[in-house]
Amino acid sequence: MFVSRPAVHPVEAPPLTDATENPPRVRMKDVQGMPGTVGGLALRFLQFMFALAALGVMASTSDFSSVSAFCLKWKILDLQLNYHVLCSYLVAATILQSLWSILLIFLDVYALLVKRSLQNPRVICLFAIGDGITSTLTFAAACASAGITVLIGNDLNICSKNNCGSFETATAMAFISWFAVSPSFLLNFWSLASR
Amino acid sequence: MFVSRPAVHPVEAPPLTDATENPPRVRMKDVQGMPGTVGGLALRFLQFMFALAALGVMASTSDFSSVSAFCLKWKILDLQLNYHVLCSYLVAATILQSLWSILLIFLDVYALLVKRSLQNPRVICLFAIGDGITSTLTFAAACASAGITVLIGNDLNICSKNNCGSFETATAMAFISWFAVSPSFLLNFWSLASR
Image 1 (cartoon, rainbow over the protein chains, first blue to last red):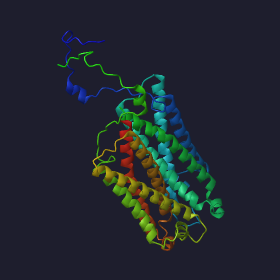
Image 2 (image 1 turned 30 degrees about the vertical axis):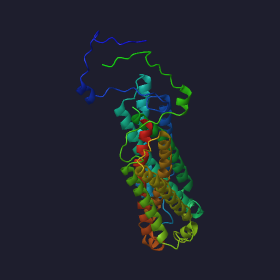
Image 3 (image 1 turned 90 degrees about the vertical axis):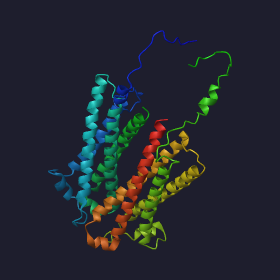
């Protein structure tokens, strides 16, 4: 049994002010899916690929000279409806998602190559906020697009003019991208709370 | 200084199997907004009131004999578009949100009256899952409705037939309800992770 022997090796108490100003780096458990792990990298790849696929499908249906010109081609019944607002929003959300995911792919690859942990609380906080914002925007864009897809889904006369298939595919890709972002967000938030 | 005196009062080691089966109730910090606090009750009230308001606004524009009969009245340009699917979805999501929130209002009031803490990890886990599901559904319904609102927003000819104002108001109420659910979900998830 270990018995403490006081006053044999007196040790100075560490200065408290320094510890509160710079909290020590807490080493969190490396759960697969968190930043800096192979699972996390796989999730980021999924997010990026599907966001890019959504963008690619929408781009492939037109010459894509500019976003608004591209979207103005998608009109319902030749009315001046502001469909281009929603279309621009889906394009913008998938672009943002792609950029965010490719940035984190680079960070994850770097962390894996130099075997450095990304489990710093401030970095995780930044990742959680970024994931929360991009996932909310992607999900909102996917839902709004799905709403329109359901609305015009049954009418073949509208769909022949508007490439409904492409729009539906892009919406599905955006949803899958959101499905891949959600675990990243939840894991980051979890590890932020459990530090 | 307290010095341990071994073997004076030998105490049996608690049986390990019991402890792993029934983990001890961990007392978590009572942050305002968590279940069983006044802040949490206020959040629940906001969720419930705005989900009910969204439902009420949609119900007030028709005789509301049945959801599908109500929603079939909302057609765009007299085409057989399946607008009623989306409309039913918004109604269903707000009904689910209202039911979930009123249930938690009763639980919160009970906890406050008998001064009992709801900070049991299993209960919090249940709340977090329920909040996650209802908030996702409400947000999806609000986004899909907002998509349609933006789509038909500028066309006065369509709006005069379809009570756009009421639909926009219901959408806004659903969004505000989602804004009130999100803090509940994040706080529950946080306290679940930090136990």
